Image 1: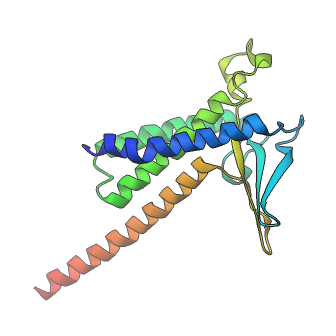
Image 2: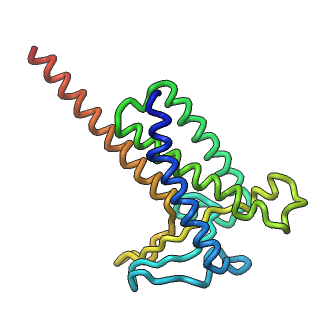
Length: 195
């Protein structure tokens, strides 16, 4: 528990800031998508035929799940808030007991906060919706995705952002930690059997 402030300052906060700064650079420099579309007509090739910078508005989750539906922004807002609550609960219970798990928690927190901030700021405060209810305004929120890769034999991978990358890296560390725990447990059992 004592490492929480250090984790937040060294991992979570810098990644959260990087996520928000990069998204705002995109928002301020790319035209928004046309009405009824999710992707801007502008794109900037970084590595021709492989990597582009784009502007995509994603109201859904990973891979565009639920994108363009009325329910997605509200549902995924609620899921993000619940996920943060569960992270706090499990942190207090000591579930993040080793370095990999603490790193995963810091990355998850950065990713969840980054996309949650988007769902509140992007679309929510547009002047056209100011007289609407909270839920109606929230239903216009979206996450800004901008990293676009073209993979051989697949095509365009769904665009993503820094927050999404943090969440994926956290999942990798959680899986790695699970395998390490199982390996250590097996080694302990073998040592006990030999004793």
